[in-house]
Amino acid sequence: MKKLIFATHNQNKVQEVKAVFDGVSVVSLADLDYHQDIAETEDTFVGNALLKARHIFKVFKTPVFADDSGLEVLALDGAPGVYSARYAGEEKNHAKNNTKLLDGLANEPNRVAQFRTVISYKDATAELTFEGIVKGTIAHQLSGSGGFGYDPLFIPEGYNKTFGELPKEIKLRLSHRSRAIFKLKHYLNSIT
Image 1: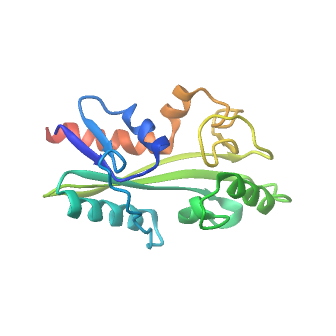
Image 2 (image 1 turned 60 degrees about the vertical axis):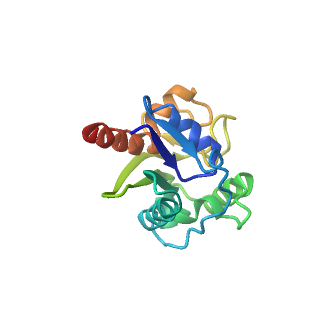
């Protein structure tokens, strides 16, 4: 397999994925000049990832994978979950999302959380999903300028710094997306 489409417009995600793959050309929707937004209308990570992979495969007839990811906070009954990107509104504003999360946990001692990614892979003969999870806690304030989204608030298990503070190499090794991508990579290696 020489080319694999990653059904996303998010360049932060693209950089994370390209760091894991070697020998495969990973192209984003922007690389393909495909700018249509794919509405995430499902209420699960699996549903949204499958929806995007199926849509892009139908358009390009090329092996494709898509992800849906989010932060799940125990004290908030799993919120923001599938609504992580739009937690504070449809405009997908990281700063507003982080503020809403901190406000929701203002008087909450239980700050246990996890990042979850589900990746859906589709080609002409297969449709598979792979999951990656990283457990941790939510900090009391933003810390660090690295990463994106909730990274400046999420402290992974075994560390005392947020994803926003940790070096890029450590975040890449620990991240939920990387864990799911490595599973996809293992599968692709097994069929080539």
